[in-house]
Structures are given as C-alpha cells and as structure tokens.
Amino acid sequence: MLQNIFSLIIETAASVLGGVLLLRFWIQAVRVRPPQQVAHFIFTISDWMVRPMRKVLPGFSGYDWASLIGALLVAVVCIALQLVVASALSAPILLMLAALLFLQWVFYGLIALLIIEAIFSWVNPQAPLAPFVRALNEPLLGPIRRFIPLLGGIDLSPLVALILLRVVHQLLIALIQWLV
Image 1 (cartoon, one colour):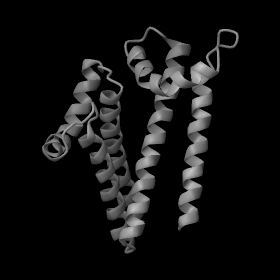
Image 2 (cartoon, one colour):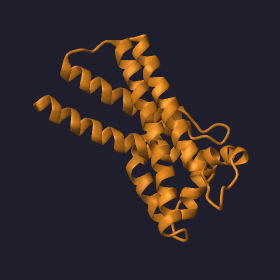
Image 3 (cartoon, rainbow, N blue to C red):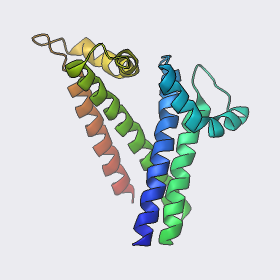
Image 4 (spheres, rainbow, N blue to C red):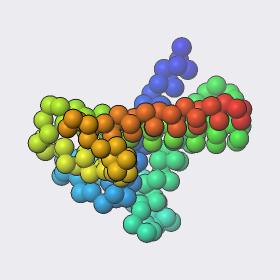
C-alpha cells in the first residue's frame, strides 16, 4: 500500500513538472506569447530546472531544447524512483518506460489542449485564454483543416486530431508491448 501511495505522489509531481516543461517547449516552438498569469506559472515551476540546463543545452533553431530534455529527464527520474521502490531497476526497462511516459505526457497534453479549445468554442470563444490555446493547437489542426473543410459551419478538425492522436498513442503502446 505504501508503494502505491509513493508511486501516486511521484507520478503526480512528475506529470505536473513534465507537463509544464512540455508546455514551455511547445509555447516557444509555435512562437505564442502566453498570458502573463500563465507565463508566470510556467516559469515559476520550471525555471529552477531549465535555466541551469540552458548552459549545457542552449536553444537552437527556435526550440527550447532544455525544456524538452528536462521533461524527458523528469520521466526518467519518475520511472527510476518507481522501479527502485519495486526493486526492478534495469537500464533497458528504465529507458523504455521513461520514453513511454514522456510520449504519454505529449499525447495527453495535446489532447487536453484540443479539449480546452473545443470547450472555449462552445462556451466562450472570446475568453481571454482562447486565442492562446487556439494558437497552440494551430500546428496540429492547420494541416487537418486543409483536408477537412467546415461541414455545415462545424469544424471537425479537433475530432479528427483527437482520433489520430489516440491511434498513434495506441500504436506506440502496442509497439512497446511487442518489444517487451
């Protein structure tokens, strides 16, 4: 029981930090300026890790590699702590599970952004955060919108993106299970 509690605490803290680091990377990758409150939250949680890493991994080609690699390191530490508690630590298992956790954060983060945009479009398209979320989703939805036009004034691209994300996520899980 204590192992489950410890695992829950570690996974929750790692998911929040990893998610914030991935959001920080994505904000800079798509060149979107977040609202001040969101930026303050993101930088407060992640600066302690990103700033020292930037000395080793400076930004390149407009990407914040320190944030992306930081999220991957958080996944590795999370899985390592859980495997140590379970007494099943081995390097190949650690790296494979950390990569799966990292990719899971990426997929869940993109899915969450799509759901938030859908809620904004139904409830309050003029909400202060709506343009920010819309801009974060544009790299994912833009290519889909080129192939799927509005149907009766309804944009189905978020639904198609959600389905595609779930399909790719399921394929990755199947691939990892096949490798194990």
